[in-house]
Image (cartoon, rainbow, N blue to C red; front, side):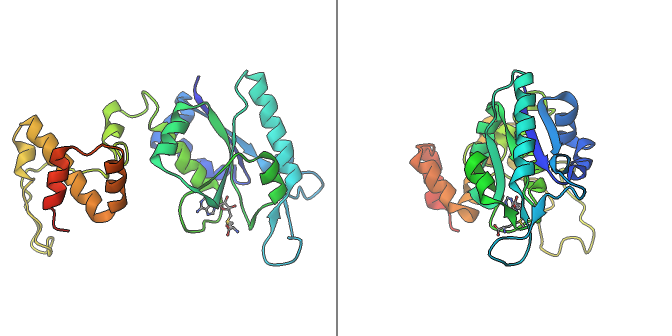
Length: 262
Ligand code: SAM
């Protein structure tokens, strides 16, 4: 069964461009990932279809109301039941959530999916969170205007792990974080660049690293591993420590790291 995402959003139109481009388009088209948009305003009542109101206690901004969210979630539950789908956990995007990692993306890619709640304004009435939200996910330590970009980010990251979505299935296996390290550098044609006169003020080598042209697979694999170790040690040393703690560094890796001058 496809991974299913039910997305609660005040701005379904923000998802439109992603329905026509690249990996996320394939998610919508092939149903490799089954994405269903639930416009929250459809579940608001009254002439003005209110979905937000002022915060009790005063202060700036507006708070998303509980009732439309509950009605929307209830409609999603009925739809899931009708499709004999499992009752999916409810994820809220929030700067106060746990930072999203590739490990969590991988778990979600192998699971049944989730209901994704996109917040807006100051946030959501806490009573909805306490009653219905199972997990809060953050994209990072900064504040966006809404949860739609986080939802699309999560859907994109999960989609590219589904069989048949990427043209080359092996390509995500060498991505950053798949083996706990950052990715190595990549090069393509031409083998030697004819730099324009003012196009290389940093003096970057015009040639591709020779090992990549050697045809020697073991040497290439070793060079790539060493580049991963070098870049990770330089930029994200904590990931090296984690890989070490998991016993994923070979003797050769440790020797290479001990010779590195950062
Ligand atoms: N008052 C909230 C706070 O300071 O934590 C920020 C609200 S923000 C303007 C509106 C919505 O954007 C949030 O409810 C959340 O759904 C989403 N959002 C903003 N930044 C985010 C982040 N870093 N990660 C995930 N979601 C985020």
